[in-house]
Image (tube, rainbow, N blue to C red; front, side, top):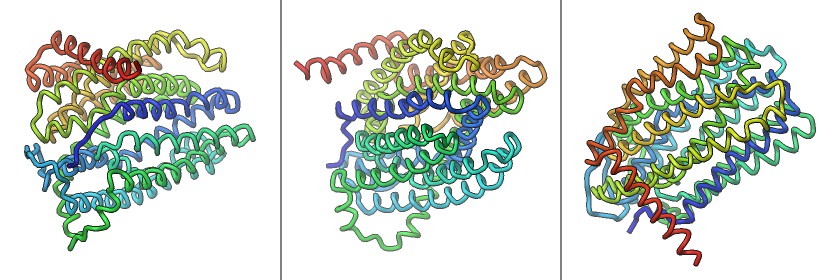
Length: 471
């Protein structure tokens, strides 16, 4: 029987994995602030933003493939374009499983090739425009690293789809340890931005190898796939692509909206305000994103189980997973935000010329809190293989970017334009629409009951998994 069981070690490894993702930035930050100039720091965030643009070429396949891999792993014989076919069977159809994996691999080969063409042309033009030729080699290495990471990112969908949460984090940890160690060595050797780019490139190979090993060892997947022969796999893969594409295209639009909401303003900042301000703005966004990512770890870990609950129409289990993880997010985000505000003067001590206004940071934290809340509720809706939020997400994102640019460029509001615009636009619709849809319409509950039940479930979960277990 193939089922998704979220174990205590999965949650623990999720925190450890995200710790290493955060530690990569935290451990490198003092060295970056010490060894790189203010302009180089700004350029590094520009690198990251352009890299995120290219990742948009994934166009929703990561989420769609992970979701559909979960359905087949948990017993579905076939996939549908929209909604889920409720089933009682929990045995994996290995032929369908092999076809969906092959479909995933073919898709990412094509995506990585397109990414390489865009980075080597448009990306290079932009980097030369904002910084000249001085850092061109660093950019080339970084661009190659982005393509390699994109090519092998299908293993993340594979691992998450079958509920191998701990194994997915093993791979991420190995990659980040590699990046941290190499970055430290190369920065101390005086290689600057070039050293950081090289370390990122090598970490991509580490991610690929460990992910490959973990996936094919998990639950005997490697042996099972070797014993299955699929005739006409190329044709079947193409047919499956057409099914997956229906919602993947919507996921792709959501991915674009995510970028516009979190990364586009960094590029606006570098273009309108300057690289020095971009360093401060980019760091604030990075810190708020780190807090949001860590706070949502339990939700992310529970998500494959939510997908299984949707497939088997187990609404009670789905509601339990949702309320527990959402309240965990709220409590952790608030606590970590307060901690970040207390530690904010440390950044000024490390880099006095990198000015970070506490009030600006508070508004950025508020914006990211709202952003994560409605995205997590939307993610729960997607477990039913429905994405009704796509249009509102993309409209909101473009409206936010346009308003940010107008306020920064023509109203001369500076950095405030880049943080007020997203908050106002989000509050207009998405921030209330999708939480309301899930809590009141899908779950048949209300906000007070949802929060109370979530708090009770969270307490029970922590007591059962950690307190009682350790006695």
